[in-house]
Amino acid sequence: MAASVCRVGSTVGRALAKSRSPVLLSLRRGQASVSYAQSLLGAPETQLTALDNGLRVASEDTGHATCTVGLWIGAGSRYENERNNGTGFFLEHMAFKGTKKHTQTALEQQVESMGAHLSAYTSREHTAYYMKTLAKDLPKAVELLSEVVQSCSLNEAEIEQQRGVVLRELEEVESNLQEVCLDLLHATAYQGTPLGQSVMGPSSTARNLTRQDLVEYINIHYKAPRMVLAAAGGVNHEELVGLAKSHMSGVSFEYEGDVVPVLSPCRFTGSDIRMRDDALPLAHVAIAVEGASASSPDIVPLMVANAVIGSYDLTYGGGKHLSSRLARIAVEDKLCHSFQAFSSSYSDTGLLGIYFVSDKHHIDDMMHWSQNAWMNLCTTVTESDVARGRNALKASLVGQLNGTTPICDEIGRHVLNYGRRVPLAEWNARIDAVTPSVLRDVCSKYIYDKCPAVVGVGPIEQLTDYNRIRSAMYWLRF
Image 1 (cartoon, rainbow, N blue to C red):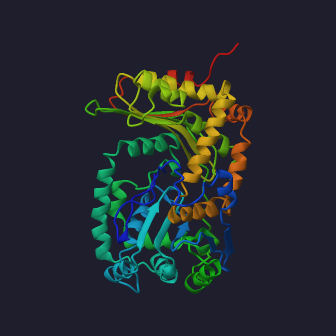
Image 2 (image 1 turned 30 degrees about the vertical axis):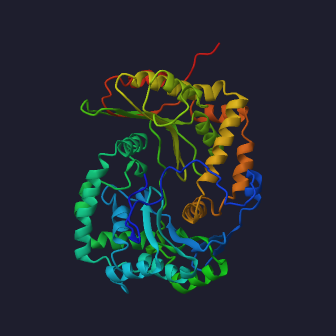
Image 3 (image 1 turned 60 degrees about the vertical axis):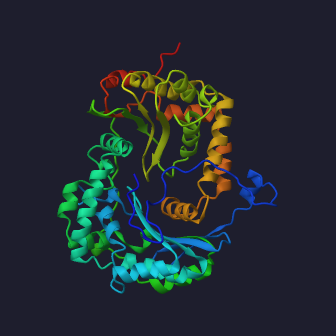
């Protein structure tokens, strides 16, 4: 789950949307049609430079009059423990409440005068602070971002004020049953490990965090080799490197006692959590197996597999003519209000699953057909299924990069995950290499006869017993 946003500037809202819109290649009047292959060839190169202290600077010059620039940091709830879980999220709320040079009012006035948007988000392994502004204001944007990260004032009175804000937000998120369901899925799948913790943390942490806890978190995790200054839009890379040297050469790369935080392995446990509440109108159910890590070569075949399963919502048109087999069954038998195949990838593990919302009478049938879709991927997936999945995935990848902000976000995350920006042409080649045989082999490796993690929230009396769900993770074949 990406945490909520503290945003100042000309708009207030949430950070990068979790779900991206399908690709829509709209053309300006008078322009000729651009093919998918031409869009791959025309993609600008992402340039990457490392400073002496280990901080990396990456940018893509798209020639726009605007740009997005930000700092992506390798720190999130996975780096926390039971005592301080939620510190990174709390710190995100404090980020724009003033620095040692600018009060909160002065900082907001600076951003407003530029017509910029200043935002942040926290996830399980990453934290990001970024600004969208006019390309000509890039120097000021980098200066303000460097202040926010290096010299946040952490005023005691502001900490107390934000404590109440965070507690209210924790209450609000409980009404978002999708987020509740997916947080519980992590809690049971990675029980006893840091990945089982939520990004926002428990209310007890928000009530008891001190200024010293926040300072300690920054001193431990905000180190130059774990930071990426990323930018996309009308950006000159050499200028960006110069700005990084001016404002961020002083970011420390040393750890006290040379104790570098190392992520401990997070084991996956097949298990379930059930929160029955018959007062709720609909059941929210998720089932997942352990998926591939972000750097695994299996990640692309699993992405194609998810594209084959697809998604569905009652608001969609198409009905029985939908391309996804699971969607057609869901429509014809009225099994659910919505479903989506999802994948959450981390540095060394991942979750591959299906989430659906159903009334209490169709949970068992929807679970059956969801697992049946998985078994089809492992045994009988066809060339036409895979071709459709490849095309859908390509369209999704292109559609997600609509604007400087999602491009900048991808650059920051890629450099943290892979040490480089993976170009779209490379993704395209890897997607084209997925054949039915490859898909069956990879899906069998991760799905077939594996113990799943299962979560149900709401009127879930009909949710199948775990042992029966486990027995449906393979087919008896003769």
